[in-house]
Amino acid sequence: MKKIAVVILNWNGTKLLEQFLPSVVAYSEEAKIYVADNASTDNSIAVIQSKFPEVTIIQNDGNYGFAKGYNVALKQVEEAYYALVNSDVEVTENWLTPILSIFDNEPEIGIIQPKILDYK
Image 1 (spheres, rainbow, N blue to C red):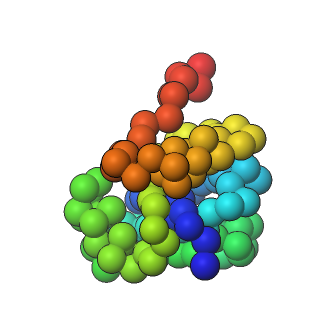
Image 2 (cartoon, rainbow, N blue to C red):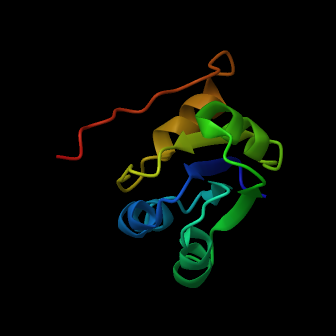
Image 3 (cartoon, rainbow, N blue to C red):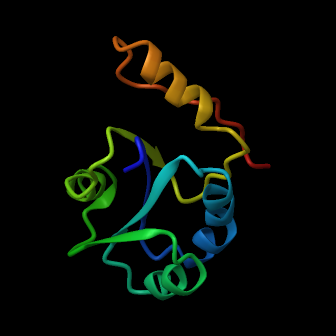
């Protein structure tokens, strides 16, 4: 089992998944990647299954919004650490390396926020 789970909450986000999920998949080798779907009515699930078979889908049985959507989904995640990532985030190479290093070497740390830059 991997130490860290990258969890992306989705609701009707096919276009965002197609645009941004490739970077998460490419640059998160040390993580298990999940998309937690908040009962989408678009083709998000089919897109993930066909284009990103390495991603694990958690299907929430309702659209619970942001906080509850994550809380419901995280009950199904077993990794020690979580990286909660919005569906419109593009990550870069080695983005998880310093996060894992800090969590592994500084046990008093409970949460980390990586640097975020506006996509534009």
